[in-house]
Image (tube, rainbow, N blue to C red; front, side, top):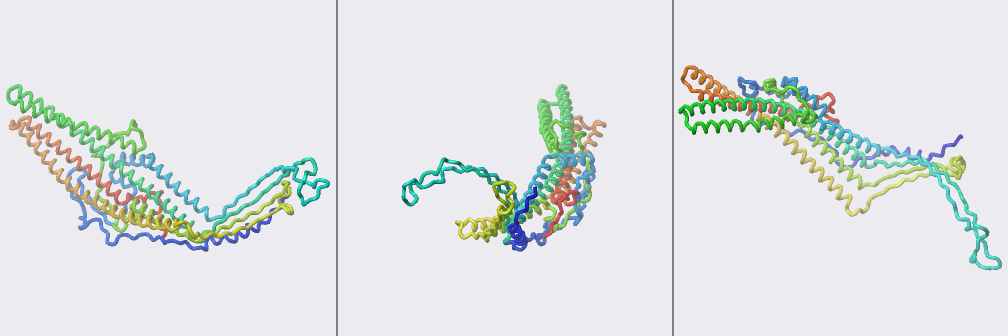
Length: 514
Protein backbone atom coordinates (compact mmCIF):
# COMPACT_ATOMS: atom_id res chain seq x y z
CA UNK A 1 0.00 0.00 0.00
CA UNK A 2 1.44 3.36 -1.03
CA UNK A 3 0.84 5.92 1.73
CA UNK A 4 1.98 9.50 0.89
CA UNK A 5 4.15 11.27 3.45
CA UNK A 6 2.64 14.20 5.38
CA UNK A 7 3.70 17.75 4.90
CA UNK A 8 6.62 18.36 7.25
CA UNK A 9 6.72 22.14 7.17
CA UNK A 10 6.81 22.32 10.97
CA UNK A 11 9.73 19.92 11.12
CA UNK A 12 11.64 21.92 8.51
CA UNK A 13 11.06 25.10 10.47
CA UNK A 14 12.36 23.45 13.60
CA UNK A 15 15.46 22.22 11.80
CA UNK A 16 16.17 25.76 10.71
CA UNK A 17 16.12 26.84 14.36
CA UNK A 18 18.71 24.28 15.51
CA UNK A 19 21.69 26.62 14.88
CA UNK A 20 20.46 28.69 17.81
CA UNK A 21 21.97 26.00 19.99
CA UNK A 22 25.47 27.02 18.95
CA UNK A 23 24.80 30.71 18.56
CA UNK A 24 23.97 31.53 22.17
CA UNK A 25 26.24 32.49 25.02
CA UNK A 26 27.05 30.65 28.23
CA UNK A 27 26.34 32.88 31.20
CA UNK A 28 28.18 32.56 34.47
CA UNK A 29 31.88 32.77 35.40
CA UNK A 30 34.51 31.13 33.22
CA UNK A 31 36.66 28.64 35.08
CA UNK A 32 40.41 29.12 35.12
CA UNK A 33 42.65 26.39 36.46
CA UNK A 34 44.46 27.49 39.64
CA UNK A 35 48.18 28.10 39.34
CA UNK A 36 50.73 26.44 41.59
CA UNK A 37 51.48 28.35 44.82
CA UNK A 38 54.22 30.89 44.21
CA UNK A 39 57.53 30.04 45.84
CA UNK A 40 56.32 26.66 47.08
CA UNK A 41 58.89 24.37 48.73
CA UNK A 42 58.72 21.19 50.74
CA UNK A 43 60.97 22.30 53.59
CA UNK A 44 61.82 25.60 55.25
CA UNK A 45 65.52 24.72 55.27
CA UNK A 46 67.48 23.32 52.33
CA UNK A 47 67.02 19.58 51.97
CA UNK A 48 70.25 17.58 52.35
CA UNK A 49 71.29 15.67 49.24
CA UNK A 50 70.95 12.30 50.97
CA UNK A 51 70.00 10.62 54.22
CA UNK A 52 72.25 9.15 56.91
CA UNK A 53 73.57 5.62 56.41
CA UNK A 54 74.15 2.59 58.59
CA UNK A 55 76.01 -0.65 57.94
CA UNK A 56 72.94 -2.87 58.41
CA UNK A 57 70.10 -4.10 56.24
CA UNK A 58 67.94 -1.17 55.03
CA UNK A 59 70.71 1.16 56.17
CA UNK A 60 71.80 2.50 52.77
CA UNK A 61 71.89 6.24 52.30
CA UNK A 62 69.02 7.43 50.12
CA UNK A 63 69.74 10.17 47.62
CA UNK A 64 67.05 12.67 46.61
CA UNK A 65 66.69 13.19 42.85
CA UNK A 66 65.06 16.59 42.49
CA UNK A 67 62.82 16.97 39.45
CA UNK A 68 62.72 13.25 38.63
CA UNK A 69 59.47 11.60 37.65
CA UNK A 70 57.75 8.94 39.75
CA UNK A 71 57.15 5.59 38.10
CA UNK A 72 53.72 4.03 38.54
CA UNK A 73 55.17 0.65 39.54
CA UNK A 74 57.41 2.21 42.16
CA UNK A 75 57.03 -0.81 44.45
CA UNK A 76 59.32 -2.77 42.14
CA UNK A 77 62.17 -0.69 43.57
CA UNK A 78 61.95 -2.84 46.73
CA UNK A 79 63.31 -5.79 44.72
CA UNK A 80 60.80 -8.42 45.86
CA UNK A 81 58.93 -10.54 43.32
CA UNK A 82 56.59 -11.68 46.10
CA UNK A 83 55.69 -8.07 46.85
CA UNK A 84 55.21 -7.35 43.14
CA UNK A 85 52.81 -10.29 42.87
CA UNK A 86 50.81 -9.09 45.85
CA UNK A 87 50.36 -5.58 44.46
CA UNK A 88 49.36 -6.97 41.05
CA UNK A 89 46.80 -9.24 42.72
CA UNK A 90 45.37 -6.34 44.74
CA UNK A 91 45.02 -4.07 41.70
CA UNK A 92 43.30 -6.91 39.89
CA UNK A 93 40.96 -8.26 42.58
CA UNK A 94 40.31 -5.65 45.27
CA UNK A 95 36.62 -4.60 45.20
CA UNK A 96 37.47 -0.94 45.74
CA UNK A 97 38.95 -0.82 42.23
CA UNK A 98 35.80 -2.26 40.67
CA UNK A 99 33.67 0.17 42.70
CA UNK A 100 35.75 3.18 41.59
CA UNK A 101 35.64 2.03 37.97
CA UNK A 102 31.85 1.66 38.13
CA UNK A 103 31.52 5.12 39.71
CA UNK A 104 33.56 6.58 36.84
CA UNK A 105 31.43 4.85 34.22
CA UNK A 106 28.24 6.05 35.91
CA UNK A 107 29.52 9.64 35.96
CA UNK A 108 30.43 9.42 32.27
CA UNK A 109 26.97 8.12 31.42
CA UNK A 110 25.42 11.12 33.18
CA UNK A 111 27.52 13.38 30.95
CA UNK A 112 26.29 11.58 27.83
CA UNK A 113 22.71 11.80 29.08
CA UNK A 114 22.95 15.56 29.68
CA UNK A 115 24.46 16.14 26.24
CA UNK A 116 21.29 14.68 24.79
CA UNK A 117 19.45 17.89 25.72
CA UNK A 118 21.40 19.70 23.01
CA UNK A 119 19.33 17.87 20.38
CA UNK A 120 15.65 17.84 19.50
CA UNK A 121 13.45 15.13 20.92
CA UNK A 122 11.64 13.18 18.20
CA UNK A 123 8.77 10.82 18.77
CA UNK A 124 6.14 8.98 16.77
CA UNK A 125 2.71 8.02 17.94
CA UNK A 126 -0.35 6.21 16.75
CA UNK A 127 -3.77 6.24 18.41
CA UNK A 128 -6.92 4.37 17.54
CA UNK A 129 -10.23 5.54 18.94
CA UNK A 130 -13.59 3.81 18.63
CA UNK A 131 -16.52 5.70 20.15
CA UNK A 132 -20.28 5.39 20.35
CA UNK A 133 -22.44 8.55 20.49
CA UNK A 134 -25.96 8.43 21.94
CA UNK A 135 -28.65 8.21 19.23
CA UNK A 136 -31.43 10.29 20.79
CA UNK A 137 -29.85 13.65 20.23
CA UNK A 138 -31.72 14.23 16.93
CA UNK A 139 -35.17 15.77 17.85
CA UNK A 140 -38.22 17.46 16.20
CA UNK A 141 -41.00 19.86 17.35
CA UNK A 142 -44.05 18.13 18.82
CA UNK A 143 -47.14 18.24 16.42
CA UNK A 144 -49.53 21.13 16.95
CA UNK A 145 -47.15 22.93 19.26
CA UNK A 146 -45.94 26.41 18.43
CA UNK A 147 -42.89 27.76 20.15
CA UNK A 148 -39.27 28.72 19.99
CA UNK A 149 -37.68 25.26 20.16
CA UNK A 150 -39.07 24.15 23.46
CA UNK A 151 -41.05 20.96 23.98
CA UNK A 152 -38.76 18.98 21.63
CA UNK A 153 -39.23 15.23 21.35
CA UNK A 154 -37.07 12.54 19.79
CA UNK A 155 -37.61 12.17 16.05
CA UNK A 156 -37.58 8.40 16.17
CA UNK A 157 -36.20 5.36 17.97
CA UNK A 158 -32.72 5.90 19.44
CA UNK A 159 -30.01 4.79 17.00
CA UNK A 160 -26.47 5.08 18.47
CA UNK A 161 -23.72 6.37 16.22
CA UNK A 162 -20.40 4.45 16.21
CA UNK A 163 -17.28 5.83 14.55
CA UNK A 164 -13.54 5.04 14.37
CA UNK A 165 -10.64 7.52 14.39
CA UNK A 166 -7.05 6.69 13.44
CA UNK A 167 -4.37 9.28 14.29
CA UNK A 168 -0.65 9.02 13.53
CA UNK A 169 1.83 11.81 14.07
CA UNK A 170 5.49 12.74 14.32
CA UNK A 171 6.35 15.13 17.17
CA UNK A 172 9.52 17.17 17.52
CA UNK A 173 10.46 19.27 20.53
CA UNK A 174 13.49 21.47 20.93
CA UNK A 175 14.77 23.80 23.64
CA UNK A 176 17.54 26.04 22.28
CA UNK A 177 20.37 26.49 24.78
CA UNK A 178 20.50 30.23 24.10
CA UNK A 179 22.06 31.26 27.42
CA UNK A 180 24.16 28.15 27.95
CA UNK A 181 22.39 26.61 30.91
CA UNK A 182 22.70 23.14 29.46
CA UNK A 183 26.30 23.73 28.43
CA UNK A 184 27.13 24.71 32.00
CA UNK A 185 25.32 21.63 33.29
CA UNK A 186 27.33 19.42 30.94
CA UNK A 187 30.50 21.15 32.12
CA UNK A 188 29.53 20.48 35.73
CA UNK A 189 28.89 16.80 35.04
CA UNK A 190 32.13 16.50 33.07
CA UNK A 191 33.97 17.87 36.09
CA UNK A 192 32.21 15.34 38.32
CA UNK A 193 33.29 12.59 35.94
CA UNK A 194 36.86 13.85 36.24
CA UNK A 195 36.49 13.78 40.01
CA UNK A 196 35.64 10.09 39.74
CA UNK A 197 38.56 9.57 37.36
CA UNK A 198 41.00 10.98 39.88
CA UNK A 199 39.28 9.04 42.66
CA UNK A 200 40.02 5.90 40.64
CA UNK A 201 43.67 6.88 40.29
CA UNK A 202 43.82 7.59 44.01
CA UNK A 203 42.38 4.12 44.62
CA UNK A 204 45.20 2.52 42.62
CA UNK A 205 47.87 4.53 44.42
CA UNK A 206 46.41 4.02 47.90
CA UNK A 207 45.83 0.33 47.34
CA UNK A 208 49.42 -0.26 46.20
CA UNK A 209 50.75 1.75 49.15
CA UNK A 210 48.59 -0.18 51.61
CA UNK A 211 49.78 -3.53 50.25
CA UNK A 212 53.42 -2.44 50.56
CA UNK A 213 52.86 -1.08 54.07
CA UNK A 214 51.05 -4.23 55.21
CA UNK A 215 53.74 -6.46 53.69
CA UNK A 216 56.48 -4.52 55.46
CA UNK A 217 54.45 -4.75 58.67
CA UNK A 218 54.14 -8.50 58.20
CA UNK A 219 57.89 -8.94 57.68
CA UNK A 220 58.77 -6.71 60.63
CA UNK A 221 56.29 -8.43 62.93
CA UNK A 222 57.67 -11.83 62.00
CA UNK A 223 61.19 -10.64 62.81
CA UNK A 224 60.06 -9.12 66.11
CA UNK A 225 58.15 -12.27 67.00
CA UNK A 226 61.21 -14.43 66.31
CA UNK A 227 63.42 -12.17 68.46
CA UNK A 228 60.82 -12.13 71.24
CA UNK A 229 60.61 -15.92 71.24
CA UNK A 230 64.40 -16.04 71.61
CA UNK A 231 64.13 -13.70 74.58
CA UNK A 232 61.55 -16.04 76.15
CA UNK A 233 63.88 -19.01 75.60
CA UNK A 234 66.74 -17.09 77.19
CA UNK A 235 64.51 -16.16 80.11
CA UNK A 236 63.59 -19.80 80.63
CA UNK A 237 67.27 -20.75 80.68
CA UNK A 238 68.01 -17.90 83.09
CA UNK A 239 65.27 -19.14 85.41
CA UNK A 240 66.66 -22.68 85.29
CA UNK A 241 70.15 -21.42 86.18
CA UNK A 242 68.75 -19.29 88.97
CA UNK A 243 66.74 -22.22 90.36
CA UNK A 244 69.86 -24.39 90.32
CA UNK A 245 71.88 -21.72 92.09
CA UNK A 246 69.10 -21.25 94.61
CA UNK A 247 69.01 -24.99 95.32
CA UNK A 248 72.77 -24.89 95.94
CA UNK A 249 72.57 -21.84 98.11
CA UNK A 250 74.19 -19.42 95.64
CA UNK A 251 71.04 -17.40 94.93
CA UNK A 252 68.25 -16.02 97.04
CA UNK A 253 64.51 -16.35 96.68
CA UNK A 254 64.54 -12.73 95.54
CA UNK A 255 66.80 -13.70 92.63
CA UNK A 256 64.37 -16.47 91.66
CA UNK A 257 61.40 -14.08 91.82
CA UNK A 258 63.26 -11.55 89.68
CA UNK A 259 64.01 -14.22 87.06
CA UNK A 260 60.39 -15.30 87.08
CA UNK A 261 59.25 -11.71 86.63
CA UNK A 262 61.62 -11.20 83.69
CA UNK A 263 60.37 -14.38 82.04
CA UNK A 264 56.74 -13.37 82.54
CA UNK A 265 57.46 -9.95 81.01
CA UNK A 266 59.12 -11.61 78.01
CA UNK A 267 56.20 -13.98 77.51
CA UNK A 268 53.79 -11.04 77.69
CA UNK A 269 55.38 -9.67 74.53
CA UNK A 270 54.25 -12.64 72.42
CA UNK A 271 50.41 -12.39 72.39
CA UNK A 272 50.30 -8.76 71.12
CA UNK A 273 52.81 -9.60 68.38
CA UNK A 274 50.92 -12.76 67.42
CA UNK A 275 47.68 -10.77 67.28
CA UNK A 276 49.36 -8.05 65.24
CA UNK A 277 50.68 -10.62 62.77
CA UNK A 278 47.27 -12.27 62.43
CA UNK A 279 45.52 -8.94 61.87
CA UNK A 280 48.15 -7.86 59.34
CA UNK A 281 47.72 -11.08 57.39
CA UNK A 282 43.93 -10.65 57.49
CA UNK A 283 44.36 -7.12 56.18
CA UNK A 284 46.59 -8.38 53.39
CA UNK A 285 44.00 -10.95 52.38
CA UNK A 286 41.31 -8.27 52.20
CA UNK A 287 43.58 -5.97 50.18
CA UNK A 288 44.21 -8.83 47.78
CA UNK A 289 40.47 -9.50 47.51
CA UNK A 290 40.59 -12.79 49.41
CA UNK A 291 38.79 -14.35 52.36
CA UNK A 292 40.44 -14.77 55.80
CA UNK A 293 41.12 -18.48 55.18
CA UNK A 294 42.97 -17.91 51.89
CA UNK A 295 46.61 -18.91 51.53
CA UNK A 296 49.02 -16.02 51.04
CA UNK A 297 51.90 -18.23 50.02
CA UNK A 298 55.40 -18.02 51.44
CA UNK A 299 55.83 -15.43 54.21
CA UNK A 300 57.61 -12.20 53.35
CA UNK A 301 60.86 -11.68 55.25
CA UNK A 302 62.37 -8.27 55.97
CA UNK A 303 65.73 -9.42 54.61
CA UNK A 304 64.11 -10.03 51.22
CA UNK A 305 63.31 -6.34 50.76
CA UNK A 306 65.73 -3.88 49.20
CA UNK A 307 65.70 -0.24 50.24
CA UNK A 308 65.76 2.05 47.16
CA UNK A 309 68.91 4.14 47.18
CA UNK A 310 67.50 6.87 44.93
CA UNK A 311 64.26 8.68 45.72
CA UNK A 312 62.59 10.79 43.00
CA UNK A 313 61.46 14.17 44.28
CA UNK A 314 59.05 16.05 42.06
CA UNK A 315 59.39 19.80 41.76
CA UNK A 316 57.05 21.57 44.21
CA UNK A 317 55.27 23.32 41.36
CA UNK A 318 54.36 19.94 39.82
CA UNK A 319 52.77 18.54 42.97
CA UNK A 320 49.30 19.98 42.33
CA UNK A 321 49.27 18.22 38.95
CA UNK A 322 50.41 14.89 40.35
CA UNK A 323 48.32 14.51 43.49
CA UNK A 324 44.99 12.88 42.59
CA UNK A 325 43.30 14.39 45.64
CA UNK A 326 44.32 17.90 44.52
CA UNK A 327 43.13 17.22 40.98
CA UNK A 328 39.81 15.93 42.32
CA UNK A 329 39.41 19.06 44.46
CA UNK A 330 40.14 21.18 41.39
CA UNK A 331 37.41 19.40 39.43
CA UNK A 332 35.00 19.90 42.32
CA UNK A 333 35.69 23.61 42.05
CA UNK A 334 35.15 23.51 38.27
CA UNK A 335 31.83 21.75 38.81
CA UNK A 336 30.74 24.35 41.38
CA UNK A 337 31.80 27.11 39.00
CA UNK A 338 29.62 25.65 36.25
CA UNK A 339 26.65 25.34 38.62
CA UNK A 340 26.77 29.12 39.09
CA UNK A 341 26.22 29.39 35.32
CA UNK A 342 23.34 26.91 35.50
CA UNK A 343 21.65 29.01 38.20
CA UNK A 344 22.28 32.22 36.26
CA UNK A 345 20.85 30.83 33.03
CA UNK A 346 17.62 29.92 34.82
CA UNK A 347 16.99 33.66 35.35
CA UNK A 348 17.04 34.38 31.60
CA UNK A 349 14.28 33.74 29.03
CA UNK A 350 13.65 30.09 28.18
CA UNK A 351 12.82 29.31 24.55
CA UNK A 352 10.90 26.28 23.29
CA UNK A 353 9.93 25.05 19.84
CA UNK A 354 7.45 22.23 19.31
CA UNK A 355 6.25 20.81 16.01
CA UNK A 356 3.93 18.01 15.02
CA UNK A 357 2.94 16.50 11.68
CA UNK A 358 0.63 13.61 11.02
CA UNK A 359 -2.74 12.49 9.76
CA UNK A 360 -6.16 11.49 11.04
CA UNK A 361 -9.09 9.65 9.43
CA UNK A 362 -11.84 7.21 10.27
CA UNK A 363 -10.07 4.61 8.15
CA UNK A 364 -6.39 3.73 8.46
CA UNK A 365 -5.71 4.02 4.72
CA UNK A 366 -7.07 7.59 4.57
CA UNK A 367 -4.89 9.18 7.31
CA UNK A 368 -2.44 10.72 4.85
CA UNK A 369 -4.75 11.24 1.89
CA UNK A 370 -6.47 14.51 1.01
CA UNK A 371 -7.98 16.12 4.06
CA UNK A 372 -6.23 13.84 6.54
CA UNK A 373 -2.75 15.35 7.07
CA UNK A 374 -2.18 18.06 9.66
CA UNK A 375 0.78 19.90 11.13
CA UNK A 376 1.51 22.43 13.83
CA UNK A 377 4.44 24.63 14.86
CA UNK A 378 4.55 26.32 18.23
CA UNK A 379 7.34 28.59 19.42
CA UNK A 380 7.36 30.00 22.93
CA UNK A 381 9.43 32.06 25.28
CA UNK A 382 9.10 32.30 29.03
CA UNK A 383 10.73 34.97 31.14
CA UNK A 384 10.59 34.48 34.92
CA UNK A 385 9.29 37.65 36.57
CA UNK A 386 8.59 36.60 40.12
CA UNK A 387 9.39 33.31 41.81
CA UNK A 388 9.44 34.29 45.45
CA UNK A 389 13.21 34.83 45.36
CA UNK A 390 13.85 31.18 44.47
CA UNK A 391 16.02 31.85 41.43
CA UNK A 392 17.99 34.63 43.13
CA UNK A 393 18.74 32.63 46.22
CA UNK A 394 19.56 29.53 44.18
CA UNK A 395 22.20 31.53 42.35
CA UNK A 396 23.55 32.94 45.60
CA UNK A 397 23.74 29.45 47.04
CA UNK A 398 25.67 28.29 43.96
CA UNK A 399 28.09 31.20 44.39
CA UNK A 400 28.68 30.27 48.02
CA UNK A 401 29.17 26.63 47.04
CA UNK A 402 31.87 27.84 44.65
CA UNK A 403 33.54 29.75 47.48
CA UNK A 404 33.38 26.59 49.59
CA UNK A 405 34.93 24.47 46.82
CA UNK A 406 37.70 27.04 46.34
CA UNK A 407 38.51 27.01 50.05
CA UNK A 408 38.48 23.21 50.12
CA UNK A 409 40.84 23.19 47.15
CA UNK A 410 43.29 25.47 48.96
CA UNK A 411 43.02 23.27 52.05
CA UNK A 412 43.76 20.16 49.97
CA UNK A 413 46.80 21.84 48.39
CA UNK A 414 48.19 22.82 51.80
CA UNK A 415 47.60 19.30 53.11
CA UNK A 416 49.41 17.85 50.08
CA UNK A 417 52.51 19.96 50.68
CA UNK A 418 52.37 19.15 54.40
CA UNK A 419 52.14 15.42 53.58
CA UNK A 420 55.30 15.58 51.47
CA UNK A 421 57.09 17.70 54.06
CA UNK A 422 56.18 15.33 56.90
CA UNK A 423 57.22 12.31 54.86
CA UNK A 424 60.58 13.85 53.98
CA UNK A 425 61.15 14.66 57.64
CA UNK A 426 60.35 11.04 58.52
CA UNK A 427 62.73 9.75 55.85
CA UNK A 428 65.58 11.86 57.24
CA UNK A 429 64.80 11.28 60.92
CA UNK A 430 64.31 7.53 60.63
CA UNK A 431 67.57 7.20 58.73
CA UNK A 432 69.31 8.84 61.69
CA UNK A 433 67.30 6.65 64.06
CA UNK A 434 68.45 3.55 62.21
CA UNK A 435 72.03 4.75 62.45
CA UNK A 436 71.61 5.02 66.23
CA UNK A 437 69.74 1.71 66.52
CA UNK A 438 72.43 -0.01 64.46
CA UNK A 439 75.09 1.40 66.79
CA UNK A 440 73.16 0.21 69.84
CA UNK A 441 72.70 -3.27 68.33
CA UNK A 442 76.39 -3.45 67.44
CA UNK A 443 77.35 -2.45 70.96
CA UNK A 444 74.98 -5.03 72.44
CA UNK A 445 76.40 -7.69 70.14
CA UNK A 446 79.96 -6.76 71.11
CA UNK A 447 79.00 -6.95 74.76
CA UNK A 448 77.55 -10.40 74.19
CA UNK A 449 80.70 -11.57 72.40
CA UNK A 450 82.93 -10.26 75.18
CA UNK A 451 80.72 -11.82 77.85
CA UNK A 452 80.83 -15.18 76.10
CA UNK A 453 84.60 -14.96 75.87
CA UNK A 454 84.85 -14.15 79.57
CA UNK A 455 82.55 -17.04 80.37
CA UNK A 456 84.71 -19.43 78.40
CA UNK A 457 87.69 -18.20 80.39
CA UNK A 458 85.80 -18.56 83.66
CA UNK A 459 85.48 -14.87 84.45
CA UNK A 460 81.72 -14.54 83.82
CA UNK A 461 78.74 -16.29 85.22
CA UNK A 462 76.14 -17.91 82.90
CA UNK A 463 73.48 -15.46 84.04
CA UNK A 464 75.66 -12.59 82.90
CA UNK A 465 75.97 -14.16 79.47
CA UNK A 466 72.21 -14.74 79.31
CA UNK A 467 71.52 -11.13 80.35
CA UNK A 468 73.85 -9.87 77.61
CA UNK A 469 72.11 -12.11 75.11
CA UNK A 470 68.70 -10.73 76.14
CA UNK A 471 70.01 -7.18 75.77
CA UNK A 472 71.30 -8.03 72.30
CA UNK A 473 67.90 -9.43 71.26
CA UNK A 474 66.13 -6.37 72.65
CA UNK A 475 68.45 -4.15 70.63
CA UNK A 476 67.60 -6.27 67.60
CA UNK A 477 63.89 -5.66 68.26
CA UNK A 478 64.46 -1.91 68.21
CA UNK A 479 66.57 -2.22 65.06
CA UNK A 480 63.85 -4.17 63.22
CA UNK A 481 61.26 -1.53 64.10
CA UNK A 482 63.37 1.25 62.63
CA UNK A 483 64.22 -0.82 59.54
CA UNK A 484 60.51 -1.30 58.92
CA UNK A 485 59.94 2.43 59.39
CA UNK A 486 62.49 3.21 56.67
CA UNK A 487 60.68 0.94 54.20
CA UNK A 488 57.38 2.50 55.22
CA UNK A 489 58.76 6.03 54.86
CA UNK A 490 59.91 5.26 51.34
CA UNK A 491 56.51 3.91 50.31
CA UNK A 492 54.83 6.91 51.95
CA UNK A 493 57.01 9.32 49.96
CA UNK A 494 56.05 7.68 46.67
CA UNK A 495 52.41 7.98 47.66
CA UNK A 496 52.76 11.58 48.85
CA UNK A 497 54.22 12.57 45.48
CA UNK A 498 51.19 11.18 43.68
CA UNK A 499 52.24 7.57 43.17
CA UNK A 500 53.04 8.01 39.46
CA UNK A 501 49.42 7.39 38.37
CA UNK A 502 49.99 9.49 35.24
CA UNK A 503 52.47 6.84 34.08
CA UNK A 504 49.93 4.03 34.40
CA UNK A 505 49.28 2.49 30.97
CA UNK A 506 45.50 3.01 31.12
CA UNK A 507 45.56 6.25 33.11
CA UNK A 508 43.53 9.27 32.09
CA UNK A 509 45.47 12.19 30.56
CA UNK A 510 47.37 14.05 33.24
CA UNK A 511 46.25 17.38 31.90
CA UNK A 512 43.18 18.54 30.07
CA UNK A 513 42.79 21.39 27.65
CA UNK A 514 41.61 24.56 29.37
